[in-house]
Image 1 (spheres, rainbow, N blue to C red):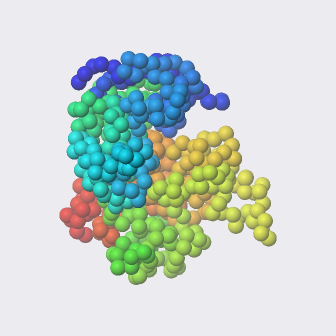
Image 2: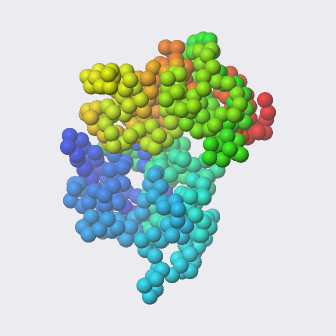
Image 3: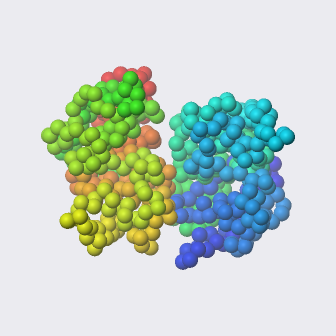
Length: 510
């Protein structure tokens, strides 16, 4: 690998009112390497990327960024300066136009024009050339909306490479990908490396750094803690650098004593409300006990999320089966009915389904619980604030005020707001769908401790996770799903990774 330095950060400091986001940071990135950057939410990763992309222009920070031998001074003329200089970003939230074709997305805003008209043949030919060069297996004429998440990620990469990118920044690129899609992405990144393209790889999934990166830089509280070749550090080293202390166990062991069954699902079947001929649940049975964490495992497409959304009254139309809570049969035909019955759901996508991002933390926490603070069509604002403040304190939400917008918070703190509002509803059963998705290792540990605390107090918790290690580390029992049905519920002592995967893939049957 070429040892030439393509990017050098020299004593970068970036301040906001009352906050030092970057604190005299210096490190180097070499041409053609895959350089990992990790750190907890709020460590400074996003600020660093925004300086590199020109969102925070030259003059708003101290220090120098040297790019390809020259000082980078972005933001002097247009927001496209970084792209024109060969610095491209693939964001966690994809920026594609879903109703347009792959080719239209790749060349959006820079379509080849001849005699005042778009040359569509050239647009699709150029798109195909980029896709083939970097081995991106996508049809240039496919409509983006018809692609899976992995292929959409490829389109984003092709879009960046169409600008002749020298440096490609990937921000949490695998957060919504399946295991097979992640491996395909890694193949693509290795191919880009062979073409001399430098990749900056940002992720909360620490194990990925050992699979794909050459060097890793760790940030904490706005400071660069270390930059090392990845082969010289361990997973425990990264965690210690990130949180400032050694975490001896990733999954805290609680003192849980499961009691009697509080929630039961029996032979549940449901169809897609928009396509009644498509069955989304095909015989699901399980139960949850008081003081227990029940993990639900399964591959993407197994029906895990469809199950919990249906139980919460927000997805499938139930055609068969029974749902019982505290021995009483319930019919959660809407979220309101589910809440009234005693169910709460922390959804998989907190930004789309869990929060009103432009509203305050206070409003988000109190929103589903307004009946607790209202009488005669008026809300008691003092009671609302006190109850919300108590929840925010108990979950240690890091904020200067309950009145700031939810969108200003880090991912971990946003997730705590979602959990807070559902705990305030005092549920009999708390359902958590991928509760640690996209948050850092420290925030994950806090949520694990919260789950333990709830179970120790006798609450029933159902947890879905895409990470099998997390399911096995936190659950008392594991229910495994495959193709819309439940296969088996295993005591944790019998739930090895091999057995769960055999059940999830249909290789083994109950």
